Image: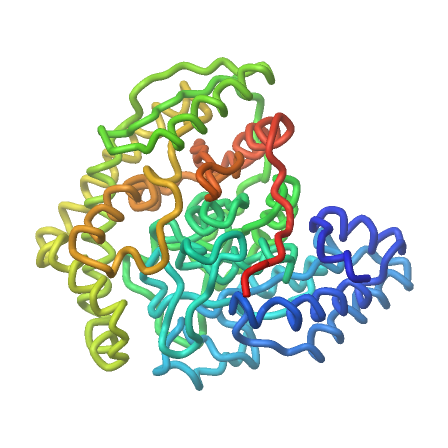
Length: 466
């Protein structure tokens, strides 16, 4: 039992379905792993072991009746604390929401349960889910189990740390500016930001969000194998009428040409040598798997990032400014102040022009991705940041924002993006980002599988610091 937490989600689902393991055994092993390791990394911040064991028993009972519980048959999953789960507080890393207990599951949580997933805990996020670092006054700081000197990423840093440390097999995350893709990168994992509209979203515990978050924020999986990303996407994407933006699109499209674009430094962004090396290595892996790879310039990223900032700050300035002041969490105040300054005052004219410019950008990207079904580009321009680097100075914040150009740009365009782990450089994880056409996650998963097959396969790590 002690090594069950090393298994991938796909391996667990197969073993439980075949009765080689029981869901109860799997859940107990992961609960013990949480007890042993979580005090060191602080990834899981809400625990409910009896509920998890009850869910596992229900999976075992379904199998005993000859039923298939679903694609996540007995797989331990964590949920980020900014998404509603019945009976648990949707804190979003805030003391102000410590007692905001959800009365209903969000669609993504409902879908995970319906697919046979066993929710084993809830994971940390920075206050307001606002940063690429995971720290807040309510739950504390999450450490990267691969290297405590570097960020586990954010805002889904708890989810990524939990997957990397073997506390769960699948980590649920959300992404409005890289919050799935960057934690996966920082923790040496894979992470998928699906197409906008692919996975239904709704939190009954709060008012509906404003337009920026409505059209940019998504849920998605973080995992240790491309196969796991595939099965968790299938589970999370089940229909739910509570989300009017949900699109019931097929999980696989038609035939496509195995043709990829390689853009090393979109819009001239600075890119570290180690990241460049990972990109060229990825291109060679794909060529060896039969892909045509051409180094070309991609459509604009910088304008998309500017629109992201304007839409996000319009939402935040209108709806969250008072809460940020009341929470009085220093890191989020620092970040909000600088993001507000950089975006400028977002009035009606700015908002309308941003939405207008967004349409033209989406059109340009759709045409590009028709010719190149995969774009290979950086996840970040730098190797994973040092802990708390963004709030260490104004210059450090500006440098982090520039390194994260692609993280900020993609949500505006609405296309899917997959962060793929490729190895390690200078004692830090490194990887690449794959971008594809809307609702063609299947193309990204195929390319990601070819990359994984030719090199690095993420594994569980046990923190070995004192």
